[in-house]
Image (cartoon, rainbow over all chains, first blue to last red; front, side, top):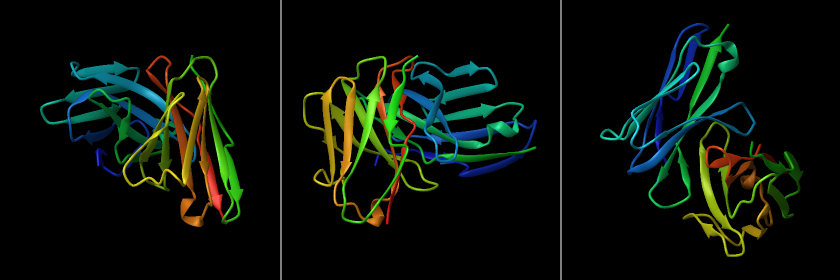
Length: 111
Length: 114
């Protein structure tokens, strides 16, 4: 299976704190994307990082990529209750078009 | 921006019947679409890759005779769950190659087989 692993599986924090989620993948990638999913809904694209990039920022989001460790992290700063959702990384490998999703992190931000 | 419309958003069907789910790219052409399945509190599992005008490519372990995929036009792919059973109850999501980030996802279909 190409599916990646994410940790933690669940994370509960107070509003205003930072949330960090980690993703590991198995084979080399072209790029890695992070998505957010509210319960029972579709996926919302958050950020894409290419294999030759090490860090990217978008608003309160910061993504890092370590290709030597085959891992990525998503940091959400100054969390808000509205950030409560599941977060998935998705890795694009090789020449194929497919994305393989990580196992996801369920984030709960307590107001 | 690119939009992928997926219908229906939810469906309840009787065991043994078939259900068709549509995935449309609204403002771009998608030669390739993907179908995923997601069980409660789990990740998305790629089921198949749908290519316009040709047969779909199924991931290992996915029954192609049970999950029929048709990609007859550049804007429409359909997934038909044939002879559905309760174990097929799941959340099905499509995505299309296109849009700002390369891939755009539909909003998903919640299938419940009773």
